Image (tube, rainbow, N blue to C red; front, side, top):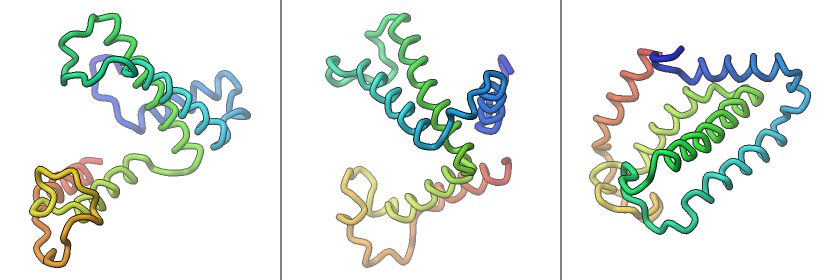
Length: 145
């Protein structure tokens, strides 16, 4: 897998095998995995806790800090993938569906450059979605999955 693109399905299979080899399925209930995920999000939050706003690309961070960040991000991702697998949710499909839902909630012509919640935007004249780029990307990704 090194050097190749890794899919969510690759991670799902890897985590399932990892847990099976260690006889950890008995501990991987949805509740336990969710609590582990929350714990990892807490560890991820600690990295940013006292840094204030951090610029994109983390130009002021040293390699050790970036590696630590990558490890914590990975922990969050792996627990999320494992939780979705145990719950019988196809995470890739659910994520694509959610992007489409959000594209409808936040049409470009009402949301561009705004951080307002969807229920704060005027959707009364939303006959023309103006989300063609998002829909095209979703269709392209769906076709390749």
